[in-house]
Length: 94
Length: 485
Image (cartoon, rainbow over all chains, first blue to last red):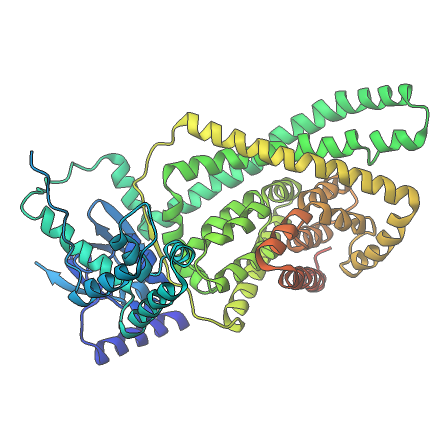
């Protein structure tokens, strides 16, 4: 319960202070293009995420949300948690 | 065909300017272009910076370093990020209008299964089935039960041990040397018997099962499914890999904690491996010891899991640092190739065998020395006190002592005590719990020192011993209160 409410709080805060859409806001089946990575918050993880192909301009499709987010990126399938998803700014595609 | 002009990457103008500036200071000879080494230096590549420092004139090197540092300071994002984004843009532009994406192939049954294993409604039952069949039925029942019974009970106890004992007694007239080779703690009758007849079948079955799971691409799915649960322990789903491997051999598991992202995660995982993860030899033995006693088995499993969760969540709260992030590539499921699986299993068994046999022989020699010098008796007398605190017969003290040489060795010692009918249900449960939680074996401790330094490793081991005994004492009290004899 603690963790869940913590997540909800974080998401709420992100929505109010920063209206940009992130991968964590997508619904299963949604397609989007990554526009930026929050490199400050990612710190040492940024390079590793880039190595996996999560870069500005990359097109993703959200496959599932639970227990972690699952993103399809070209032929690659990636599992990332909600916290990482919130650090990927996206622009939805139709 | 005309030669193509080199591809101009659309780096931002200021970055191109910095690259040119650095390139002007580069005078040494390198196997690649100045522009390339300047780019690497700006990206913070350690090797490139080191080369520059070695080959450039000190004043030039100072200027280069100043530019690199200044760029990093003034740039709001990492330079690598800006470069990668520019390359991605260039790649997309190149592919645009040239690349066609066809409709994806129809899903095969493996694709469907792969998708199902990632979604909790089907994924969790599949996870339980995989663990039940791979660990319990295959390693526990087949390996530790059937195979051990046959190799240990029939081959060793009926044929090999009496034959070797007779042979040694005929050839060697001195009882002291006879004891070293055969009898109760002999190298052949105890050391080799444990290594070959008890440990090897269990570990072999585990490595076979693990290689199958590994090669099928199932492990990342396991990580994905368990990520949320691991967050309670300050870990991410990635930790499932060292933990599953730790169920085979905690020493290997401890080595693999390197794959975790932060030092904080590595410390938590190493502690939990040392404390609450039994290795396959221990696990197999404990499962076979407790298999006749369902109550003891359930209490043991529940209690060890409880300690695992309690200690993990406690560490997650008290250790400084940020919580973990989880990201992992999930490959498609594949049918494992028999040849690869067998090669892997055999290589791992060989490695284990060559690592384990000398230690077992050494343990036999130490016990032989200890027994004949009287040293062992005085140490065992001290550990007997601990055994009595746990409400266990004094003989168990010696078992814990053996446990330090190898965790599985200790469990194997318990096996002999059960065979003699020395333990009640309560004692059996407490002994199994204390032994599971007990100190890491010598090899695991060595790896802990290597990964975390002596003091941290020592503190972890001390905490483990303290925790094992206090948990054992508590459990013993609770079981007595509950009226279990």
